[in-house]
Image (tube, rainbow, N blue to C red; front, side, top):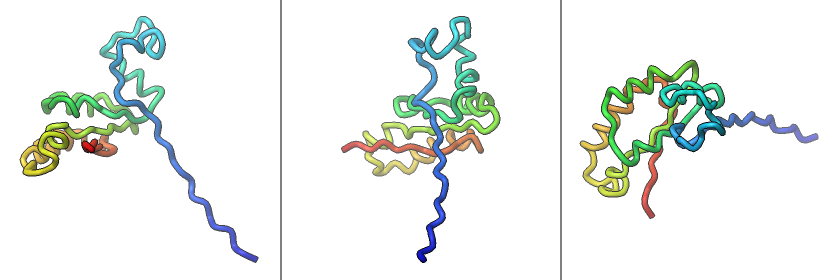
Length: 121
């Protein structure tokens, strides 16, 4: 008789690409919830979020520290690499840019789940 393979459990972590969408008000976010409290509310429904905005612009250290401070319990971030690195420099001669980006991302500490690279065709 053939021994059955032990099946490993697959863990799904569900989140969205961002949380700061005004058209979510009254649909996802309660009507009277202030925008500054949206991330805290978001965390009551999801345990991870992709920060897509880092693809379009650089944020300073203060913002990364604030994101870390706002992440409750096991909440995590996926950070998208800036397009300057991936789409302008095409990863070439970008050691300094990657180092700068990495230093900022490191500020998230254990709240960083992964770094996402979107590459051009």
